[in-house]
Structures are given as structure tokens and as C-alpha cells.
Amino acid sequence: RWVNTPTGKRLMGGGMATTNDLGEFRLAGVAPGTYFLQAMPRPNFTPGPAAANLKPLAERPPEYVTTFYPGVEDSTSAQSIVLAAGQTVANLDITLRKQKLLAIRGKVVPPMRDLRIMAMPREGPSFSFSSRMPLAPDKEGKFVIAGLAPGEYAVTLLEGPNQMRAIRRVIVTLGKEDIEDVVIPYVPPVAVKGKVIVEGDLEVYAQKYGAPLDYSTLRIQPTVVNATTFG
Image (cartoon, rainbow, N blue to C red; front, top):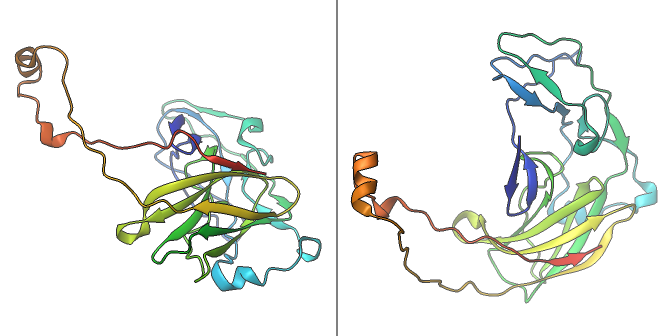
């Protein structure tokens, strides 16, 4: 199903399987519903220093990319599959597509330690090998994210414990060429304080749910609502 996330509208996974040496697969225990089926080749990641020596686009061979059933690269063109309770569906063959993969080059300004950069497709599956694992910019703040299929990406700057807190997001559109000179400004995070006010009668709430509202269970989460655009 489609859900809205801070990086865009995204498909949530309903299961995963690995193909055998013949390319055959079986997904078991899938709940009834409507699904899109995708095949994700496991690529050779080229993060960090290796990506800095990336060959020019004209010299890169085409590679297999994430492909949706029956053989399209875009989820909006994919054919949906409807599963009823107890049903088994067979002969769902996917023809993998090939294309040249692209790169995003840029710089974090000013350079800072203990930061990470990653690129996530703005729309599409909740997980895809089109995403690149977080990588560290060099000492000058420069970074290269390679091995990306054409499309729109949220290039995200991460810091905090385990470098997994998003603090800045830049939207980059990859077409037929690499994108150069993407600038991500580093702005130190700030503290946001406030108070949650509950509407309605808390006694009615307690009677309805059998317990009073526990404020310690509430979670407050900021969401990025704007971003710089490149491409």
C-alpha cells in the first residue's frame, strides 16, 4: 500500500524472498490484498573513495536495475496483483531491465566530522537497492553517491547517535546525466520545546479506554516540509 513519508509517497513492503539459481521465487504467508511485485538486483556498491574514481558516464556499462512486474522500471507503470484469501498465484515472471547508473556529487558546507550522507528515492518502495547506505563526506566535505537509477532522490544529511538523525534534505532529480556541485548547508540542530494540550474530557477518555492518558507514551517528531532542489 502507499503511505506518505517525509521523503515522499512510498510503497510499504508486504514480504520478501530470494531467487534460486534458476531465478525462481516463492512468497509465502502474504495477506490478502493488492500488491506490486518488484525484483531488486543486488548491485556492487561504490561508496566513498571508490566512487571518487568513477568512470565517465559514456564508459559505464548498463546494469540491471529494480524492475516491477511485468517488466517496467517505474512503480506508476507497474501491473498490480490482487490476492484473495487462500489463493495461490503462479507464473508471475519479471523481465529485468538494464540502464546506465548515475552519480550525485556534492559538498557539505562547512565540512564537519561525524556526518553521513544517503540518497533515498522520493517515491517508490520503502526499501530499494536504488538507495545507498549512508557514507561519510571527506575532510573537505565532498561526497559522491554512485550507482543510482534515474529518478528523484532525497539526499539527506545525517548526524546524531549512529549518524541516523536527518538534519537536512536536498531534492535531486537524475535524468540522463550525473548531477554535480550539490551543496548541502550544515546548520547545527536547535532545541524545540512546547507542551501537548489535549482537547476533550480526560475523564471520558479514561472511561472509554479503561485508563487515564499516559503523557509519557506520546512521541513528538519533526518532519521536513521544504527542501532545496537540484536537477
